[in-house]
Length: 236
Image 1 (cartoon, one colour):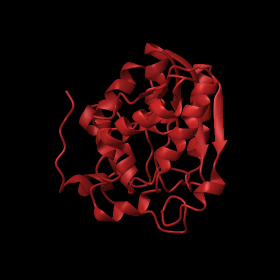
Image 2 (image 1 turned 135 degrees about the vertical axis):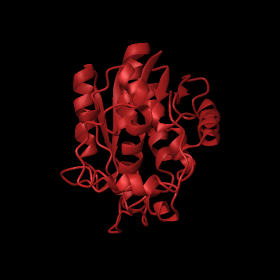
Image 3 (image 1 turned 90 degrees about the horizontal axis):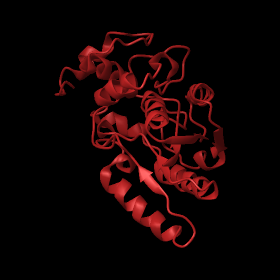
Image 4 (image 1 turned 180 degrees about the vertical axis):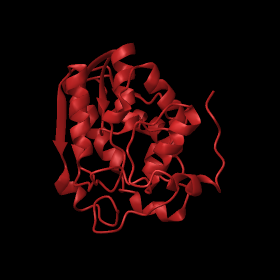
């Protein structure tokens, strides 16, 4: 399938880009500037596109993101520390973010005669982000079937939607993903903070997958206490 990957520059989406490049026909990456405080992730998406020798489209929706107030990713609100399963992590929700981005990505795919749009939502996202759950993926596909009827047929490809982030690390390693060339931290500092939900999840995923983590963290041990009260399953 001729596939466009929605790539933030994070571990999940960069791993997905490498997977698609190996298994399908990758024809481009699309990224979104929605005013996120960790905008530096887009640099890592650009590096991924250059590495895989495909076009990289950065869509500026910062004006829209500015109206999606109340999120720690776009407002002057402190990014919480801790595990994704904690109630405080709801501060990182950007309302309808994936629906907005995917609608644009599908328009791009239809215009470029692509067969699929691939997105790296995964099982660990289900708890906190409603637009990362299987029900959303299925519903979005049905909506796009109606929206593009008679013009284009584009599949929403979400191969990680029912697997853990540790499984993504394993899959990324299989396809040669350079994990050091990915950015996860929501705080957007010079190094990964090691304390926000996405840093904790990233560090735990490498541990569970049994893969060395090349990431440099400001606090490389915080994740142990953050995950101690939650149950995770190792990936074999």
